[in-house]
Length: 259
Image (cartoon, rainbow, N blue to C red):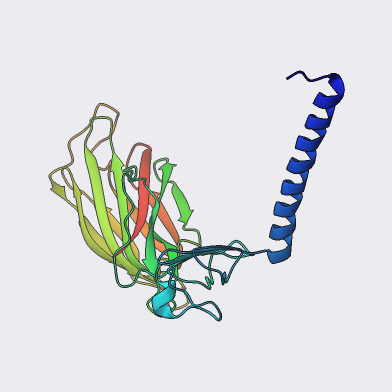
């Protein structure tokens, strides 16, 4: 069988027409229905997958029927086990745990944890700790303000520092609002000795804590027996002022953390 140029042109034209008609029909069906159902003839969202194919032909699925459903709404909400999601990701776990595998393991200085509201079931990021470092010259002070978004009204306040001889100091306080209480302090093997100054009646601050570490060994960086001594107070509910009572500059790592 031989084909001339006219035959080839007719065949090509027919193929193009068939493809155009098929494409038009697909577009028309999607445009007409605006919803796609997989396993169901009664989709409740832009995309609705009925895993068990057990949904009714009319009406919304029951709780038992939507337990195996997956939907994407016109607003972009995704529902798993829930045919009418109210959040960007709305999952009904059916009293089972959620599994996420092979997450990278990191412990940054400041980080959030996921918490679940027992009333609304909303899962949100909640600050677990916040850390900021400041370098303070001898007899000078610095103030660190914890961002309001951290929102840890009651917790631990931790002061850490090191010297050039790889010796460390750590002191822990507990706080609630403007109340600041000393817990413990140690610089290598030397126990901290705390004192608190009375709060003036007109002051709106915490008490002022002074912590000294007697008999600290001198260090090659110039630090003497006072090198880890400091004073700290809360000037507001979210602000801490630390004063370096030592003889050399110190970098302090200040951390607030949930109890």
